[in-house]
Image 1 (cartoon, rainbow, N blue to C red):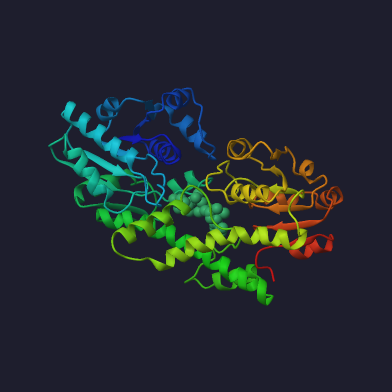
Image 2: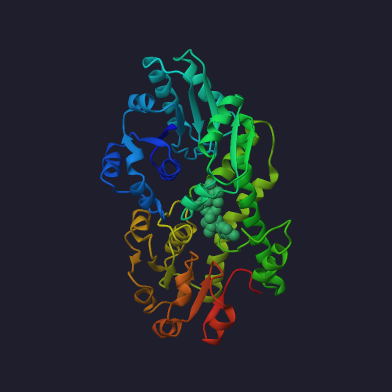
Length: 431
Ligand code: UDX
């Protein structure tokens, strides 16, 4: 099939490369000239395991362009994959989506295109599909269809999530268009759920909000565990073994970050409100997530008494492991707060140092090895769950530190082992 991807960001590139792997011809378009030129030379602007290989392997089926006319000439199913960043009030900014819809409309008309299908992959509030239809209608009067096919891609596992998803959601008020989009995925082994446009849009928000709720729930359980002397890791294992609950997304820590959960939970809360419903539970999910990072600072304060002049090494800057992405990273926020209290910060991350430098002040010392930052440290904060932090030579690190204090914001290390090494260790909800 001949498909286009509009927006060569994270979602667009993974989706486009995967569609090419499934045997389709894909035109990937972006308004960023420099990005497209790089992509044409094989330079992939994001870090995502397996993506470069997939693009390279399928290069004869992928073309890149900045030209919307070319997109409409080469494809008849168009996936909108542009960003929908949060506005001040939490609602999604649809400027890019609207602009793409207008451009599509103009070019459909200019090229007298027929049987066009416009699909939203970007996470868009319920009702956006309808708005896209109205915008295109302003210039293009022939029949066309709008479909919602939300993505559920996790950064660092996005290629696998795309090729082996748990389910594929396709929503449209035009059943023939929905079946045509389903056809794209015929070689993917996953159940396909076909529904209407609004329901598909809602499924995406409800899925992310539910996962965020699981995280805030376990974080609150952790906070009680701390008070009553129970271990949240074992509580999560115990409750997660019940199939109705499931083990995933029950890792207590400093709260969720990244480009999706914070934005999508706020947006669902906002558009529920706009529709006349006060989604109380989500308000709490957001509050708990924000409060969780204070907890790390409280734990540091408890041991260090005064933060001013203290040397703190932060291990991990990415919003989660295996990515260089620092968007809405809790680590960055915690560093900013510690600096406000006068602490001297050094920081290490296996992948995210360059991106983090753009978000943090010059006062942060970025180190190329965890050991370099440990010299003279009064505390270490583990802010991202990078598994290789477990393998550090902790006895040597302890010798370098001024005070052997570890605040493990991701419950990565074994508390007993760390205490055996004579560290003062605090995790989240470890009793
Ligand atoms: C998420 C969704 O999983 C994906 O389906 C959607 O399309 C985009 O948003 P992603 O942002 O890549 O994906 O990250 P994810 O792995 O879901 O983690 C999100 C955040 O939650 C991270 O900050 C992570 O550290 C935190 N988290 C996750 C926890 O604190 N505890 C958990 O148990 C799981």
